[in-house]
Amino acid sequence: MNPSDQSDPDPWGIQQDWLDADEQAQHSSDATVARLREVIGEPPADLEERAPVVTRPGRSTGLRTTVACEDGSTRELDDVVPDDFPLGYHRTAEGRRLIVSPGRCHLPQEQAWGWTVQLYGARSRRSWGIGDLADLRTLREWTESLGGGFLLVNPLHAVAPTVPQESSPYLPATRRFRNPVYLAVEDVPGVEDADLERHDAELAALRAADRVERDASWTLKRAVLRAVFERTGAASDPAFVSWRSGAGDALQGWATWCALADEHGPDRLRWPAEVRTEDAPGVASYAAAHADEVAFHAWLQWLLDRQLRDATGSTTVLQDLPIGVSGSGADAWAWDDVLATGVTVGAPPDLLNSVGQDWGSPPFVPWRLRMAEYEPFIESIRGTIAGAGGLRIDHVMGLFRLWWIPAESGATDGAYVRYPADDLLDIVALESHRAGAVVVGEDLGTVEPGVREALAERGILAYKVLWFEDEPPAEWPAGALAAVTTHDLPTVAGLWTGSDVDDQLAASDMAEADVRKGRLDLLERLRRDGLAEDAPVEDAVAEAYRQLGTAPSLLLSVALEDAVAEERRPNVPGTTERDNWRIPLGVPLEELPDHPAVGRLLSALRADSGSTLPRPGRP
Image 1 (cartoon, rainbow, N blue to C red):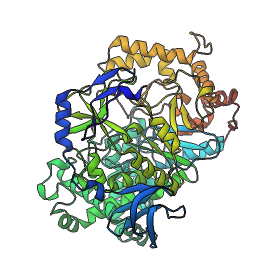
Image 2 (tube, rainbow, N blue to C red):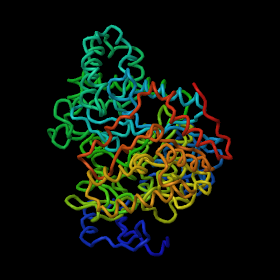
Image 3 (cartoon, helix red, strand yellow):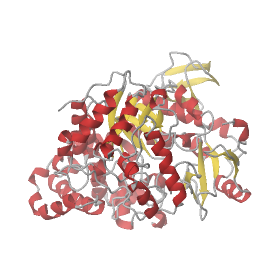
Image 4 (cartoon, rainbow, N blue to C red):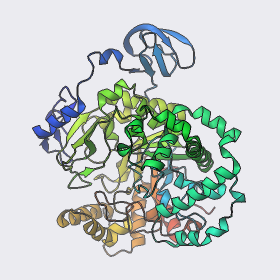
């Protein structure tokens, strides 16, 4: 791609001319640009004097000042940041935030393979109709016994505590806190005194359901958890009280939002004006008057923190960071003045979707994010990494620019808006360094020049997918997570049998010719080394992972759906009538260790590899 074929952004950060995924020049309409300029507005004249300075040791800052460092020390800064200057979030004497980053993310030293898991669908016979954190612990222990080095899970972020539950993990109410639907109720302190047997019929129905029934599962879990909370006096448990105090204002805000959602519904935009935003005048008095309800929702987060840390142990579990949040949710409630109004983000037409995508999340206004000292972004990164040791950034190109779609417009009628990518990437590097967390950037779709180079320079792993790559895996870079497919793309079995084509056509408005051509393109990659057209599905799966095993990439990701030859992908983008994000794994967790397809897949992964990948074995 030629950078000269793309226009520079205007003073609002809007890039009107751009190249699509086929490297064809495109031009956003004047009407779209005019609307986005209204939404973005004008920053204060002194923005550049007030915005944070994000830098690294050895770099010039233009500042000559005294700095109050995060660790309590005081340092003098004379333009260039000394090599021994503390990393972290500091404050100059003038009140300006100074963020000092190492500029590089943490990286593991050896190649490893691991499972990609849709946790909600990874059900055991004991879980309550939805995969939970005890199931994650089981998967982690099994992975360790096989010689695997990591797990990659779907976003575990919280949605509104009401029903119906939002099914998409990529449209959460918050990116800072986790969804209590993933709690393993039997592991909650005090539940041993609960009469769980009276729920046997409900549990049997949940376990027998052919899809994940989030509403029923959460309704039952919440009732039992609330009873335990009240019976045990959990609000005054010293361990919880201490943890809650350390979690600070962010947790209090989240828990208050949940209590408000219980009373007024999940859409904060429909709430009374006195509580519609976190800084509204009635919020503090509401929290005081509903202290028990607020404490309950905070307690759920304490349980989640404990169970997640137990589930992950010392194994890297990459948490997935969605590109945004619901405009009616808790993060939007907290940062209403930082988000754009009347706009959502998505993607123009590309290899993934020929009609474009609208993901439904409002974007941060870039200059407002700077005025907020990047705090919304920092808290989202930190909250997602916490307790797990890894991070996958969905649509990492959004740190550089985002496709903004005005309300009442289609996904094709948007324009790109640019972000302060250097600052955001250095913040990611700082949080990765502190947490010892590996970071993967999902760089699929329309990727502009320079993005992949900037990610590599900071140690952020690329995302290489067999279905997307013309080059064979043996030629892929070492600095990558390598995979056969993703949650938005066909499973090997679905592709090979052709059932994924039928699924897409039944659930979307995509042109049949485009869908069928797309399948043929993917089959070419799968058959590049001579796989027979009439080969059984098991051979196709083995071939896909034999190819993947030749990749020198640092992380090799194995989809659990492929391990059991599941034909249905977790999600078909742009559809609403399909059971997206509700499809359970076709095999209960208890049967995975003895499933013959699992061993065959892992043997294929290792077969032609010159790497140090361990050979699979029995637990």
